[in-house]
Amino acid sequence: MRVSDFDFELPDDRIALRPARPRDSARLLVVRGPEGALEDHHVRDLPRLLRSGDRLVANDTRVISAALRGRREARTPDGAGSEIDVNLHRREGPADWSAFARPAKRLKVGDRVVFSPDLEAQVTRRGEGGEIALTFSRAAADLDAALARVGSPPIPPYIASRRAVDELDTEDYQTLFASAPGSVAAPTAGLHFTPELHDALTAAGVSLSRLTLHVNAGTFLPVKVDRTEDHVMHAEEAQLDEATAREIRETRAAGGRCIAIGTTALRTLESASASGRLEAFSGDTSIFITPGHVFHGCDGLMTNFHLPRSTLFMLVCALMGLETMKRAYAHAIDREYRFYSYGDACLLLPHG
Image: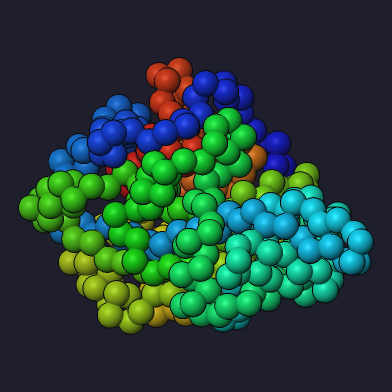
C-alpha cells in the first residue's frame, strides 16, 4: 500500500502537551463493529463499556531516564570538548546501549562523553543518521541507578520541541502498570489508568493481565519509503509468559474478549500468535501490522491517537479498516480530541 494513503491533516493545537488530570478523565472515542459506529465517552466509562468476563492486557514496561546531556572530552591536550545530547535507544548489554546523539557529527569511535562526575561512556560504534553505540563506566543495576540520577524522562520530540521537560514528566510519563525497567518511551495507552479505574474494572468483572515490551526510540522514526512493503520495522524486546498466555486463552474460550491496552501490548500478542494460537513468547519482535493482517491474539484495542503516516496509524487501520479510521480521526479532530502521547484515547472493537 502507499504510505500516503495513511496521511491526514492535524492542527498543531490538537497535540497535547500535558495529560488529563485525573488521568481517567481523558476522553475516549469508541469505534465499534464493521460499520465503524462512533461514540464519545471518557476513559472512566470503561467499566460499563466492557463486559464482565473480558480481559485487558497491559504492558508493564517502565520508562528509564534515557535523555542525557554530556560533554565530549577534548581529543588533544590543547583541544576543546563539545556539548552532546544523547537519547538512549536499546540496551545491548549490561553496560552497553545504542543511542541517538545530537550533534552526532562531533563524535568519533573512541571518544569519551562525560555525563556526571561518576558516569561517562565511550563511543564504540557510529552509524548513519546520528545512531551510536556507547559502553558506560557502570553496568547493570549500578548503571540504571546512575541514569536515574543524571538522566531525564525521554518525552516525545513533538512535545519536547514545544516545552521543556520538567518534574511533572517524571510521574506523568509512567503508567500505573510500570514495573519492568527498560523502555525509552511510554506505552501511552496505559497512561490513562488510575487505581480507582482499576478497582472499578475489577468490580465490573474485567480481568487484567500483563506482558512486557520494552519500547525503543524506533517508535518515533518516520516512515521514509513510498510503499509500506518497503519499510523495515525496528525490533523491540518482548516477553509473554505461559501462565499469562493460558489465562488469555481461557478468557477467550469462555466467551470473553482480550483487549490490548496499547499497540505495544497488541504487537506482543500478535507476535506470540504467529502460529495461529497464542503461546508464550520471549525475544525480539519486529512485527509490522498493516491492512490485510489477520489478528489472532486479541479482540480489541485501547490506544491513543497516532501520527499521520506512522506505523501505529497503519496498525489501527489494519484492525478497523482504513476508511473507518480516517473517519474516526476526522471526527476526533472536529470534536477537539487531544492527540499523541499525552492525549485522549480510542477503544477499537472490530466485532462490535
